[in-house]
Amino acid sequence: MDTKSALALLYRRAGFGGTPADLSKALAVGYDGAVDDLIRGLQLSDASADAIQVPEMMQPPFAVPGALDSEARRKFNQTLADERTAITNWWIGRMVAADNPLKEKLTFFLHCHFPTAISKVLYPIYMYRQNQIFRTLGSGDFTALTTAVSTDPAMLIWLDAGTDRLPEPNENFARELMERFTMGIGTYSEYDVRAAAFAFTGWYLNRATGQFAVAPKLHSKVPQNFLGHSGVTSGQQVIDIATKSDSSAKFVVASVWSRFAYPIKPTDPLVDDLAATYSKNRNLADLLRVVFGHPRFISPDSANGLIKQPTEYVIGALRALQIAPARIPVLKPPISGSLNSLGQVLFDPPSVGGWPQNEYWLSTSAALARWRFAHWLSLVGDISVVADSPPSSRVEAAAEMLSITDWSSSTSAALKRASGNPHMLVSLALVSPEYVAN
Image 1: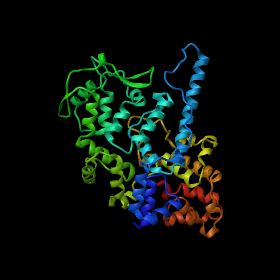
Image 2: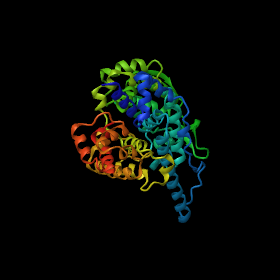
Image 3: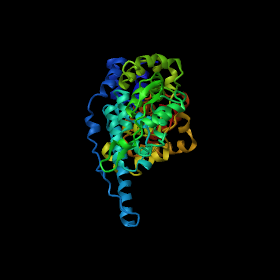
Image 4: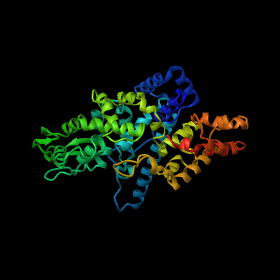
């Protein structure tokens, strides 16, 4: 893979696609320099993204109307719906505006890794707070991140904290912590699940303050044996042991590689090499640096390994066609509606397993939704780089606009037939296999 193609792949995976200016700058510093710049951006503030105003949201304690006051209940529910739309537009705006796109891409990855759904959490302020945890702690220590997510209201509601109490603890959170978030299937026993559940007893969300709390009278003080460790009496000990286990190192590495390169299992030999590095400090930014710098990241397996998820597809297209973030809340139809049609509603994943990958997004209905979005975007976005080019150069101009280094012969032929109609050409380019692939 030549340097330009490698850089285009890097910017698709570490962000939402590189602009011609991004790739020009990256070519000047080389591939390793571009990786350094992207990783450095995780620690920097992002003035453009931060300029997207956080919407007003109800704060706890929430004055929930009584069931008999139908009009007050209707207004309350409408306020929640309006807030949900507002925070969705806020995050879309951040992703479109971001100067440090890896920070938003990592936030999106963590939303998929630690999925919670607003349909159950209900209050947008809690989803916003969790989103900010992903953004501020996501590139650091995985144990600290897992602790923050586990004690955050969104996760406490999502996995039924408050029902984990003596004498019979709820095992829901303990199981999902190990299976979905830290270690993976087959790395623990049912005895470990029960031991962890006892350690988590008494954890709950204080509804008056909107903060995590522990109820001493509902918390088990009996020492547990968990994953071979004795004397475990607290949820924090469970998180520490789970996240620092060898199984967790392999699971986290496989999860990150699968979302940024191509799907693999924790048993893949590649995982052992990366896990040895990750285990030194369990820092996600350092892991991403190793992932992006690995020869297999810029291999054909990686280049052909992922299909854009709807959020990646939509945000990348909005950035490429220079949709100003300020337009996001007023565009018709709304961007959130396009994501809904494509099957991915931000802040509302379908289950604790998050969203699936690859083939799931290649259904006939998804293809139709992509076409409708692409055609609409070609009409409201900036396609001047294509329209102002001579017809004979428009196919190449579309490739540059979308950060595609090469069209297949069949795609090129189809686009050339539309070269007399810039809107149609851009629409076709946006649904081409080269662009739908990530």
